Length: 145
Length: 145
DNA sequence: CTCTATAATTGTATTAATTACAAAAATATA
DNA sequence: TATATTTTTGTAATTAATACAATTATAGAG
Ligand SMILES: [Mn+2]
Ligand SMILES: [Mn+2]
Ligand SMILES: [Zn+2]
Ligand SMILES: [Zn+2]
Image (cartoon, rainbow over all chains, first blue to last red; front, side, top):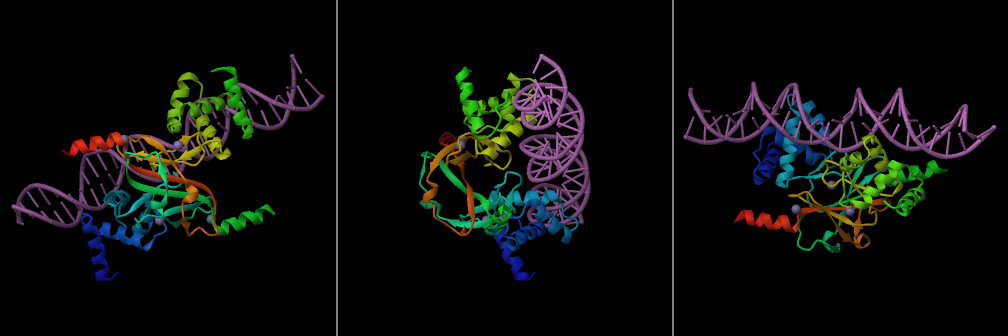
């Protein structure tokens, strides 16, 4: 990890009024390096192997503060565990029912016609699709033969 | 509960290949009477007061079988607990960050332009919005004064 | 109707994600 | 340097949901 890379991460935190502690930088770095929607536990497992003193509570606290500050977003597509995503711009999430993979897709939410939310202040939008990813779809077809 | 009402509920279950046991009819009846997206625990609490022998496991089993059969849908908008909805036709869900109310809204999902899911088989679609409902929005404004 | 196989239900134990909280360590400020 | 504040730790608690074996109810055969 180069010095200026750390500076960029620090700056990202400071801009959101989050003090750039060592652990917070590490969590943020992890999120940038793993955009496949990791769980808190996956983040902890990886970072704990590098930083043996790291506590799981710190990982949870850090992730929650990131979400609250709008630096990351939490997605709860399967209802079992929350996952974290450093990409906060609007996009949808597809979850494969078979292999569990979570894949981004692009959507134009502004084009979505909505009725019944007159007078509501909408601040968050999540679109979750589910089904079978291409490879699992193939496997499913082969099994039926 | 009139006799023919029970017959209609029974028929609804049989059509989905679910045997119409007493408990299952009661859970289905509850879902029709409470379309405000109850949790498994809320359903259990109410039915348990009428049927003291009812087990929570039965409520969970029943709800899961309803979802699997496409008779109801599960929504996990807050990431904490699953909620159940007897309305399976496409609609979005708004959750108020302040009072926790979950409100339906109508959407035209077919009009939603999606890119990045070529080759995927999409079988489920969920749209979750969040923010402030009209009354909570008013309260929020008043507090800031 | 009686017997038996199958399905449904119960109740308890267990799992697992997340939070609560107080003590300890680190950091910033005077 | 001394003190106040923030961060982190570690453990305990919470809680939604599932696992599973025992019990009860139901349906079909004879
Ligand atoms: Mn994403
Ligand atoms: Mn609904
Ligand atoms: Zn897959
Ligand atoms: Zn509200």
